[in-house]
Image (cartoon, rainbow, N blue to C red):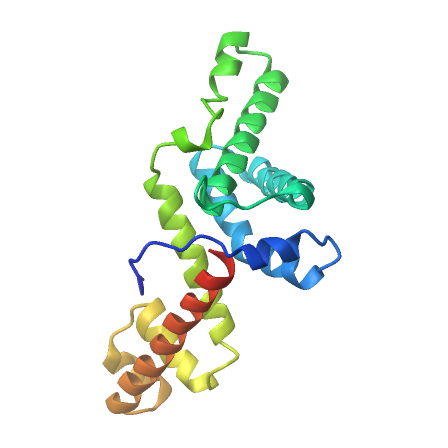
Length: 205
């Protein structure tokens, strides 16, 4: 499912300022809810197992938390999205090093080779998987938030028709509504989801 193909906007400095306060639990909860699946999925796609990927999520979030008090956001030098990916790639490399040490079956050169070249965020090549996961995380968060802002019936119609891709006729029969109601609910909920995505883009990047 794709509601927007536009490039995700850089994270606003206001959110990053709020994250400098470790006691701002609401902002940190929003940050984690939005990004944990993105970090986890990318770790899995890089070849880590479930436990290793969970550790990458934890290590990356901790690294963000430790960096925030001194972090100065300068979008002209580096977007938050690139900076977060840079941290993630370092934590993934750390996991491969730990695996190599645990297995004791690779040479030092092979162990070091998994670190990649992470010296400069700007040198990271475009990553289609990262971009896809980034946008998917926004979409899933938007849908979850909208779930409580529309009627249960409207969300059921939207979920079956758009998310599960069931035929409109089947959705109408299953939920005992007419076709006009199906398409009207789809239109309304999709519009709300798009608006929520725009809100998330402004808040989180």
